[in-house]
Length: 184
Image (cartoon, rainbow, N blue to C red; front, side):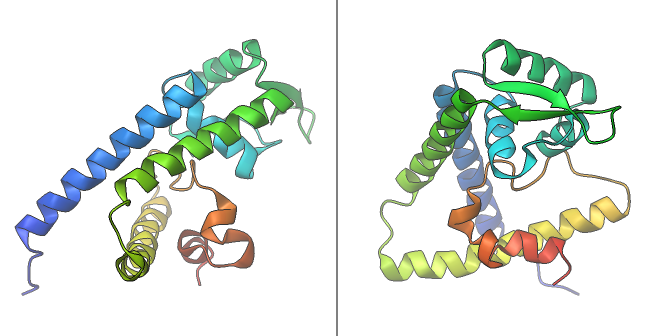
C-alpha cells in the first residue's frame, strides 16, 4: 500500500498555492485593467499564440469559443488586438497591437513581482532547492495534463498561459512543461 502524503504538507501546499493564485490574479488583473481571462490572453498572445485562431485562444485560457469571441471583441475595442485573415481563408488570426504588446509585458511583469514578493525570504540555497522541487512538480502536473488530454478529458486551460518563456528557459529547451509535453 502506498504511503499517503503528510496531511499537513497537503494542506499547507494547498493554502500556499491558493494564496499565490490569488496574488497572481489580483496583480495581473490590476495591470491589465481587465478581469477574467484577459490578462492570460494578452500574455499567451505575446508568448505563443500570436497569429493563431479564436479556438486556440479559447483552449489556452480555458474558456468556451463564444467566451473567446467576446473576449477578443473586448480586446479589439480596447485597441489591444486586431483580427487578421487566417491561413486557410475560413479562419481568422488574432495578433497584439503595439499597445497590446506593451500591456502584455506589464501584465507579465506584475505576475513576476507577485511571485517574487512571496519568495522574498528565501536565501540562495533555499531558492535553488525550491527551483529543483518546482521543476519536478511542474513536470508532474504537466504529465497529468498530457494524460488527461489523451483521454479526451482536457484540463480547463494551458499551464503556460501566463509564463515568461525566456525566464523558464523554453527557447533553450529547459522548460519542464515543454519537455514533458514533447514526450522527453
